[in-house]
Length: 514
Length: 77
Image 1 (cartoon, each protein chain N blue to C red):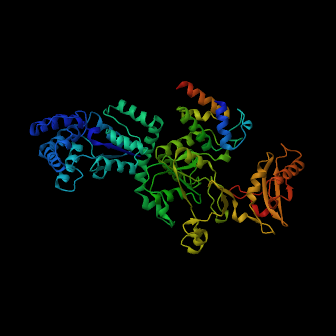
Image 2: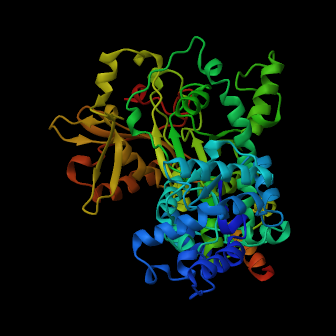
Image 3: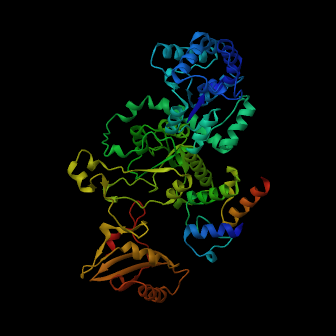
């Protein structure tokens, strides 16, 4: 979480300085009187462009700043009461604090500029704000400063200049505009702009960010070891984006989150099974390893991962709280990682599990961008032939079939490998018909396949709600067939009294029921 | 409020409004995930400019619960 403070006018009372020094100095040396006494910049107060030409103005302002005022301003001006404390508090919470200034002369690449920058550092230090040089940025003018802020998209920005506030708000960046850092007042202003819930979330994320940065010092060790990773199409990763990103990946191994986070090098808050947070269970699923369990539990909590229960395990209502937290996290610019398959599909032959579509709504609601990631199994590692087979250029061929309608909406109809090719050459996606049959309220499971040139539907009904299943199914299929083109009509119906055999990921083993 | 909730839910899950009753269970009957439910709730919160406190979210089971909580918060704030 990043917070940026403006220095002049925000942390310091620049206005008072200008009025106390510039006004008498210019009156004494040039006989000028203020035209707009309430303006912020000296140039505006005296409407300087009307009094002199460009070069002359520059010289006059240089004289004012360099002669003695800059030194006085830098070394004697005190921050607003509590301002330094506020900066320090944000750092202690774990925020990455940066200071931006468009202070005159500091952006110059010459001796005067260097002295001005040095004086700024000294001013900060004597006011009790010790930041590394990298955290302080100097800009030529407000325009450049605003552009830099828009590029960085900080979670919190504190500034006082109306023109900056306007520009940032237009770019959908919220700005706190304060002249009072008294904690109660400042917090009230923060809440007014960002909302109490978002502030709480930003604090949590900032805190976990601090732990994350410590952990990343061990990156070499964590990502080293026996596992080797190869990254394809890295150029497609979103970079330098300060808003919320939802990382969506298939799941091959318990170490996926570690590797994805490590290589992307961005703090991602993964959604993980709740048992890792509370019980003695661990990602190593091994009670013989109590230490690893403790470490998992500790890290997951510290990294602010999201504990969730699977949909099929009848989740408790705690899931709502987690989902809400994910929502807020993305809205304040945090990154969330999710494995919508719900579980790891370890074996190559298991292919992918169906993605639960909940994440799409989450991204829509929070306006987060989705970064898709595909994790391949070891069969593809440095195996160009296998890799080439599943790629078309940069695009991974998922094996899904679908079409786009006139409005550009994409519809997925089924898996290519399940496609039924009838003797007359027509192609039918079994999943499409299965979806239609699953809408019958009494149908628990269904597999559509091809048998002797006909389309066959094998149905496992719920006999409790529909005792007379054979008759009802047959009637309903006749009705359904009326809505289908000829080649898609279901020619044969089987009713079974046992559920279908499943794979480890609870998918019906399709090929065994042809 | 119940009516509005039913409208939104019907659109979200692609069902006719009549098929959703106050007693409809969001997870079991509508096959929604907790993410879906929260997306819908947040949409309401934004529309009415209210916030349902996180601890109260665990009271949600049925369609009626959503409407009731939204109404309660609306009256409080």
